[in-house]
Image (tube, rainbow, N blue to C red; front, side, top):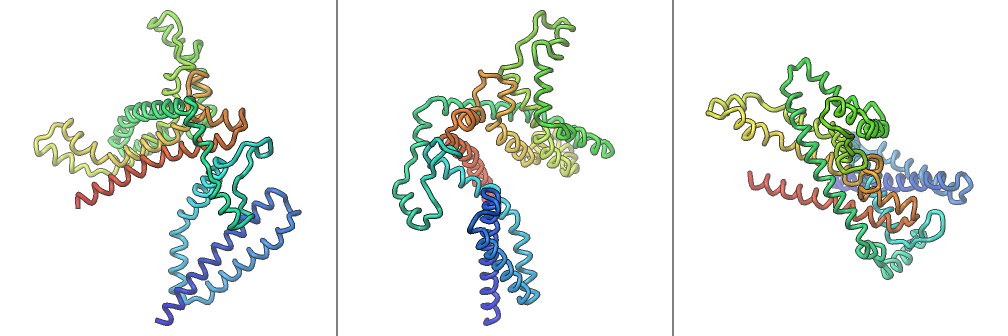
Amino acid sequence: MIDEAANRRNAALMIALLVAAVYFAIRTALMLAQTGLETPALPVHVAGLVATLGGFLALLNKSDPDQRRAFLGNAIIGLPYFWLLALFLVPFLIVLKISLSDVALARPPYMPQLDLSGGWTALMDFLSQLDFENFVFLTSDDLYWKAYLSSLQIALIATFATLLVGYPMAYGMARAPKEWQATLLMLVILPFWTSFLIRVYSLMGILGNEGLLNQFLLWTGLISTPLQILNTKIAVYIGIVYTYLPFMILPIYAALEKMDESLLEAAEDLGCSRLEAFWLVTFPLSRGGIVAGCFLVFIPTIGEFVIPSLLGGSGTLMIGKVLWEEFFNNRDWPVASAVAVILLLILIIPIVLFQRSEERARQAGK
């Protein structure tokens, strides 16, 4: 019992030292990025980093082999969570902090209401005077809600269109001979070898009034005058489907490729036609890939900026364009951050609700 209690104390102390070392490392990196080597507090933070990291390594050395292996194993498992913390939660908290600030003629163009250097007193003052002025402002201007609704509409339609195009392609790849599947997979991934911006610009050349598509339709005699495709929502849908199609194909292909063929044979032995076997066996088993593909397309599409700007023109309203205007033209970072926070909530809430419904369905099936 004494050894177990000591091991727990050592593990807790090692975690505390590791967290402190990460804190000092982040603070040191920020100081070097902002003011370079001239920061007076820089030596203190470097010394803190060295001391905490040295203490952590010393404790790790003194611990018994079993505890060391367990701690290192847990640390490796925890790396993805630390990655999410560093690259998602921390930036989100920074954006949230800016959204609760006031706009100002400064660099950066906002006046923080929360000064972390003030300690606990500054935090309590901030909480006592907390207001959501920038969020309230969004409700008073129809532009933002129209942009949200338009983005949701475009993202939903584009995701459904991508599914309609991507599912047959993924199904064909999964049913192709094994020697062809690697080649087909490479052809799906091939567009990623080209810059995203270059691909969108190439679509401008294809969809324009003098583009390849109109020239082909005129040559075949199907139309007598060029179609206005560029600078419309149709062009935006085409651009999104073309750009994000691999994100839909790959997870569906992965789900279909590992499906047991004997299930289809059993369904046909029980009297199902090929179409019935597809709807009763293949489609339900590929549901996980469909859901993953839809999320991978829908989430980046709803905040898309490049495609609606280049292909949709000024008439296409999406929240990504509004964010660009607020950040870089209006220089209103607090309002832009509030827009981004609401957009993130719009994306997170459905995902959480879907995960809960899936969990309830799994528990009900047990």
